[in-house]
Figure 1: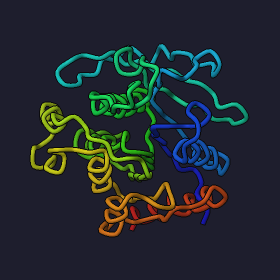
Figure 2: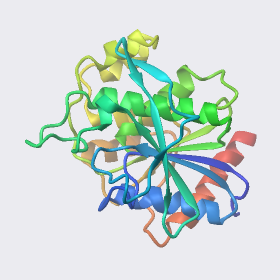
Figure 3: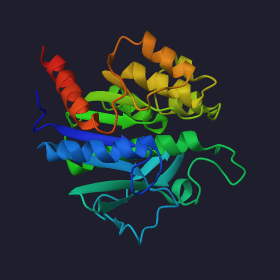
Length: 273
């Protein structure tokens, strides 16, 4: 059964050609384009990493969407929205930007390869920024597909903060896990989330959080999960074995669009039963 006329929101840590060389970047570029070609509506979001060449990729700020402030850990942060087109595709990508979180030239690790201490806050800002922008666009996705641990807060916000919001109340959530190295996140993450009003008992698995813990947390809040790499870490493979969610196994580049179109269709059909 082919999927048509669905509204699909793709949220990804990486997207080709703005970042390069990752399976995630390739999938997050290929899938929305494939869904668009099948007659669906898409919106695509990623962080505006500091190493993205704005002139080369012709990014420009979307003034009507920028200008909001998001509070992360009791501090105000200005949200900037930029947009660029993917050459050779009829596809636009929106970028979430902020001076403090995304200006640095490196992506997730500093010059000594150390994982940034504020990567948890960068992820929170990114996920919250995506959802606030979608609301501002007045767009109501049927499916929200999250790629990578950094998008893990999208399901949390959708299920527990925007659960009564007409933009998201009927959206189905899909999370794709990738074979990224597990990194330790800031130990105060759960505290920052309780400040935002999330109940403590919901955050038990994030007391000493790693990026894998965060991915598993997101999987638990989603309707369906998929494998972004043929082989995942032992922790993530076990999480897939244990899940009661609808699962799509890894699909190669050649099969990816067709497999996901069918999968999305099944996830949406399930909602109607």
